[in-house]
Image (cartoon, rainbow, N blue to C red; front, side, top):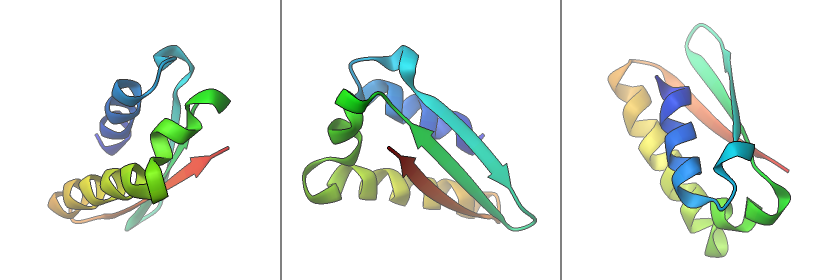
Length: 77
């Protein structure tokens, strides 16, 4: 569920939604979600001073709290 949430948010932000790749590494209590986008879309995902990335992490944190888990978003260049 968390992987799909990040994928939906990222695809809505970028110019090349077909090049968005999201993978999830699941642990017992923590999930690490890795987001990879096209190089030219990296700035759109991060945003000015990291505001967009911070907002995505906040939404992910709220969603993961409902699942009684902890989620970390990693944006890979």
